[in-house]
Image (cartoon, rainbow, N blue to C red; front, side, top):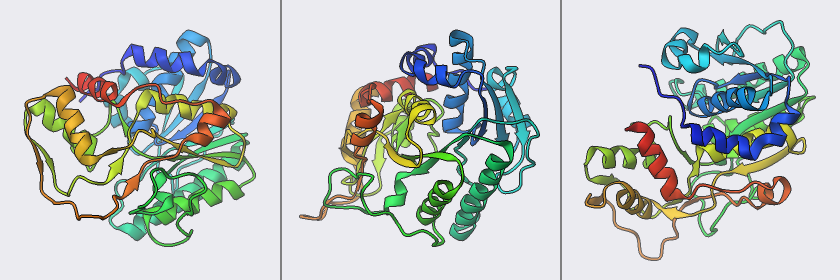
Length: 334
């Protein structure tokens, strides 16, 4: 099925905040893994918008497991002459012969059969991308890591800063594998920036997978009760995808080398509050069903970033409030 392009107002907003970043990238050749997924659509459409309206003249090679499927799904991207699709997997792709100046390693494996296989795909894929970075002479690499590197079930703090202890590298889990991949990138002979990505909302967010906000939007659009299987107390935050694109392009172009930044919103809401906000924004008459009962005195688990480092060092901000982000996402899907 062919998907809709992103809203032009969102793409224009990205360019408003990334003019300097794209000026520094003018004439660059990018290599992007994960370019056909949730993050990838936003990166590719925004770089093409920069080519059209800012004269950025940026070429992009996109690694994808299924180029034919992407051409069918997103012809408005795949058909642009600035885009070259490369069939392959991060763990064993053939190196393109043309030089690339910048790499965005944003691939997220969703097909591994179990945790050890998933961890191996993350680490081995990163090793392969770094080998290509050296072979192609790339100057800069942006690695989209995850807030999961801090571990799960964090309590007794409102927001998680980059100085919070990370999971130890090396174990066979997603959290540890992302931390191992970070270290591989830092140790490589290339200027690397680490984006520790938390939770996001916007067009292309899957509504039928394990993302609470996507499930809530799906149910609200369908007129069904919003169902919370837990007790609704865990705290989360959600950054709209145009802000994510602004942050990632800024980091690739201007962030100090070998530095990690949290990427996300610092507007903390509980899952129960998120359900109520989603219903109030999209369908106020919807009932909200919560299966569990909060344990008195138990601190809620937190997955909310402290973004002071990105704000202070890179002048990055959250510009789209949560209610607007929910509305924009729902509008794109209808």
